[in-house]
Each structure stands twice: as C-alpha cells, then as structure tokens.
Length: 79
Image (cartoon, one colour):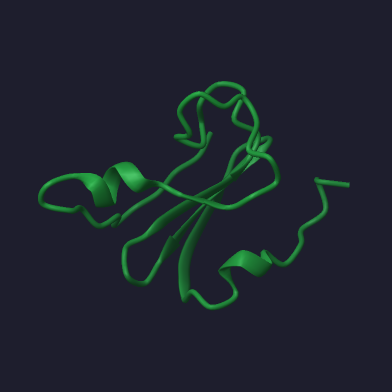
C-alpha cells in the first residue's frame, strides 16, 4: 500500500534535510540543494515532462541543475 511510509532506497546515499508530501507525491531536498520527486505525476507535480506517471522511480528536478547558472533548492513544498 502506497499510503504506508517506506524507506526510499534511491535516496539512501543522500543526506535529506527536508521532505514534503502531497496526497500522492513527495518531494525531498538534499543537503547539497538537490530536489527529488516521486509518486503520482498526473498533474505534472513531479516536474517530469511528457509523463503522467512517476513510474515508481525517484526523479531529480533537472530544470534547477540545467539552468545557467545552476540553482540549488533551499525550500520545498507539496500540496
């Protein structure tokens, strides 16, 4: 069941400093300022273009890192 908290194996090597969650998606912020999303993407809430599903994977929000100059996340929210 997806409503039961679980360990996110893909983030076990990250030092996560903040976590936010919506009804069907979550956001994590690492100490380095990297932002990760996982869960439902039916309304684009994961920041994944062209996909209505998060596919059960953790995704780094690349738009922050692809910007020139690259950006670091300092705060996260999910609703």
